[in-house]
Image (cartoon, rainbow over all chains, first blue to last red; front, side):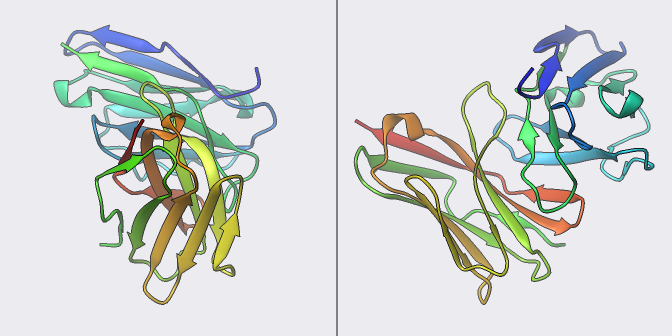
Length: 114
Length: 111
């Protein structure tokens, strides 16, 4: 596709369950980012991937959060043992190269923890 | 800590008027800034960017101004239209690979 694709668009799950969120970046984009956006708030950086380099995980809020990027393309964000405070919109973005280039965002996954 | 912030959380303007959305940043080392527009249920959409070696950059109906002396960034929208109603975020590239976003300003365009 032409843009960043995220799935599912909405996810409702019970507290304590694990969830996986998927991101398909724009083809050829080497940098991939995950952000979290709580209602009415700005974007909170979670993790960043660049090529085959080790990811920058400095924004992950706890060890329940992890992410992978396979083959330098698709990425999966996993949240284990979900808590109600994990409820938010999770946004993925990609850019052609990292640094001084615009990031292109998907429409996010709205996660609701009951 | 360093942060990006916005002066006005909500801005209401009349259709056809010009809009100005402001942003303050605190890191003088930031060298690249972006304005995004986010509509309800959508991801942020790139509007315009500016590098620190510039003071002004113009796009279609939008202008970004950068004042490095006072660490201030603004987005000007000319002849504001109902379709401009959204939340606007500024972002700074403080660290080479990471962007820091403000909390956003909601723009309401009254017909």
